[in-house]
Image (cartoon, rainbow, N blue to C red):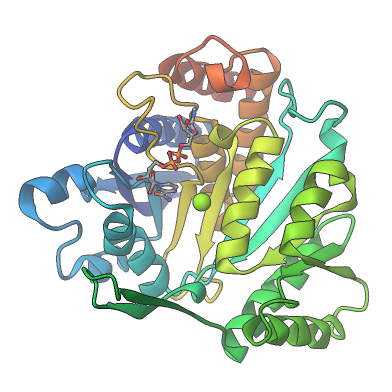
Length: 358
Ligand code: NAI
Ligand code: MG
């Protein structure tokens, strides 16, 4: 029987994005060789801040068109101190998410075996969340402008756009996600007391869509109070849906509460499957530790597992997650998780475990 071939566009980007993408590619190749039945064909794109500083562009003009030919995109991280962050983000990752209709960003968080939460009495069963982030509009719509930029009369607007279509589709995705999980709970986050238009529309559509999902238990939080609840009562939460900005912030908090930002994965999905989806750890390029070979690759591996799952190889994805957790449980961890291993040692160990286990 012929193997399925998955064409993957790999964009390592900057800083530790390069190290962890290389590690993820190794793990994915080990997985496909060990499990069999599918193979990856990686094409690497040198779209990075380093390249931008040399040649003046991140992506070529037909970059987005090129990406459409792949089955999925694997992304490291973009951003470097010599380039303003709004330039790097708006030259690469945000255009990809928007042009490829990746309107959902899924960010699971849990405490992996052998790791612990900075919360004093939080066991793995107390923190198991999926944050569903709206990934196409809201506060990151890109509308606005600056007038009189270099004078004391400088005026800048940053306009949030919330659309009925955009809200309905993210809500439906979040309800389906909540329904698919054992606890069937969905918490919706807004700031509809102070922001009285877009956030109020979010609230209204949430309650409307909720009628289609009578088996999902729902509640609603204001984003400020949500940070308190995540810290003081993590067990009360399961699936969470929030806007682009709010979920961006809450998912960094979630990652920290689960042990380290270095373990947290994310999937940028086009649920219609007309375009490739993109998988990346949630962390950035970490200039403070770049080039030292010590970045935690677990978030990159978990993101790779989510990619494998999206491509339809569920069993292989589960196997990869088991291999990752067997290693964290055995204490094969980087410094951010309290261990002593470097990126390569963790990667070697996960590859060996895949070969042993699968
Ligand atoms: P960051 O996530 O790069 O780093 C925050 C802190 O977490 C740093 O102390 C870093 O050393 C640590 N850290 C992050 N990932 C780690 C890992 N895998 N293992 C061990 N420690 C890890 O966020 P920061 O510093 O705010 O941003 C740095 C650059 O990355 C900026 O240019 C920013 O715009 C960009 N960025 C890019 C993202 C993306 O490509 N999706 C996401 C977030 C930031
Ligand atoms: Mg973020």
